[in-house]
Image 1 (cartoon, rainbow, N blue to C red):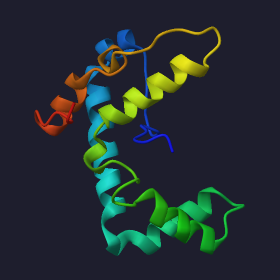
Image 2: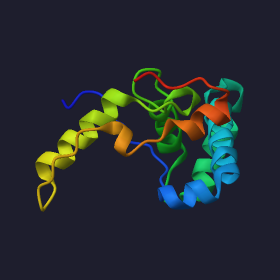
Image 3: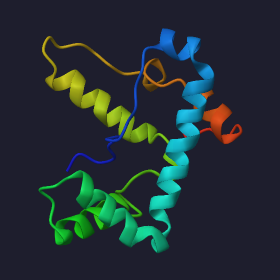
Length: 128
């Protein structure tokens, strides 16, 4: 297939992030806490109920399957909300290849500023 892939992201303009640093850091902390809550198997039933409630077309079976896939240790949500730099490189390579007009996108740090994550998590940068 395509290998590692960074599929789950949140984004904002750098200028907005600089002007709202405390909000960005609070968002990152909340996001990380939410991911950790999801990975706690004691919350599985409630997480499935929340998914069903917010996606009315979803059956219970599909919600349960989605939960398992989204929290798969290998391919699911990244623990601690960490950016997968190899996955980000894959995204940039695919966009470089398929985007119109074609444009070379190569440097993940052009699109990801680790300072907000580092501040939110206490200096624990994702692996690059």
